[in-house]
Image 1: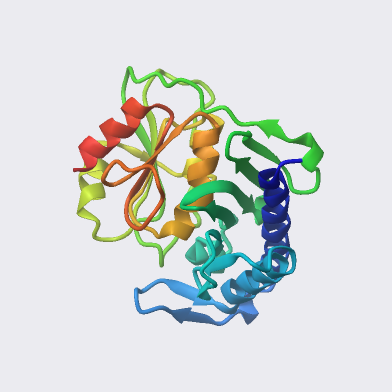
Image 2 (image 1 turned 45 degrees about the vertical axis):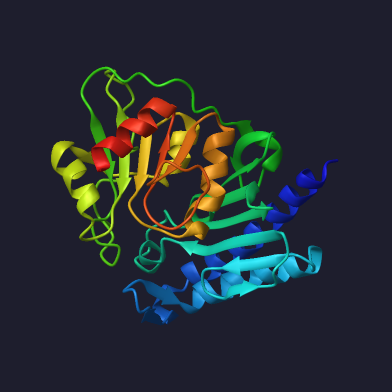
Length: 285
């Protein structure tokens, strides 16, 4: 088995271990104390204990590697670096919304080579390794994995969009969480935006395109071929490391705000074709 393959298994074990800890907190939300970070986002003990569990697995299996986590910062300076978002969507988590994720990725010499995204409350896990494709399975039956194919997009017809919470502190819990993709498609581009407040780049897009709620993390729906474009208006490398690889290994495309392909801080676009990625960036300018 390849070293990357071994690393993928480590990433999956770490992410699933963190997901189990997160689910214990999710089942006892009234006991969970909320705090606000300087940037206005929510953080809880659940975020910290999930990250601690992921780090425990990684330190046991890859003790020489560096680790970067949203809550714990970076430890080590090796060329291999694990990147953790312990609870992606903490505002959703504390509101009892089941769309939050645990994200774990491995970066080697500046390139993301393995990534795992778990949706614990929906019992789904997605993963990818560089050159090995992208996959999805039930948490309790990894042997039933199916390969993800973003597939070609049909850009003709009316554009429709699936929209997440306009304010991350006030999730759209209680709205109709129908699947982001209708059962029968009319040929229009299917686009999802996860906006943050006061982001002028996204305001114009939201004003031009009707919105729909999203049922699962939009980049993962691009990897499935169920969305044409997903835009995340803000974030850090831990928000995008795992999902950027999953989308690209499914045959899709990831772009930063300046058109780059390596995940970093700021706006990110996930698309089924390079043309759709470029078009999204043009409209967001």
